[in-house]
Length: 195
Image (cartoon, rainbow, N blue to C red; front, side, top):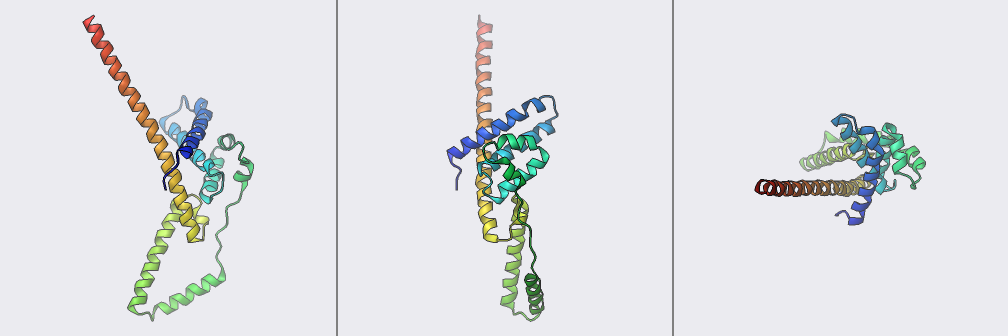
């Protein structure tokens, strides 16, 4: 899944709007404050592309709203910012059935054959990897369904790819601009020395 050009354009517009909102605030600040402002505006821009349709985007919006509510409201204009900011994330639920079932499984583990032991290790590895995904994807800790977690992860990856591609394009354009400037300054210097 590759990000589409319209997705990149929309991300760039939203990100640029966020940076313009922050511009007066970060002109005379430290590099770490500027980095934080860039990251916050990029996160909100990325989450606003999904308009709150994914758990990770709602989690990013809520996290950012606690840090900078004004930025979120400005960037989410037209997307019902209030409902997204105040929307509750699902709670993690632990049912008695699950606890009982887990206890039964623990009792049965003592009498397992070698094949069952390998299967148990595989399940444990899968559980460990999905827990890692839950920690990486914003809002992942609230997703109890593994299929939903994988769908959200794929969508989040596409959004991150969009963000990286846009940022890479900006860096390439800036580098190309500085190379052209150096080239023309070199020609100008050469012309002045000859003249």
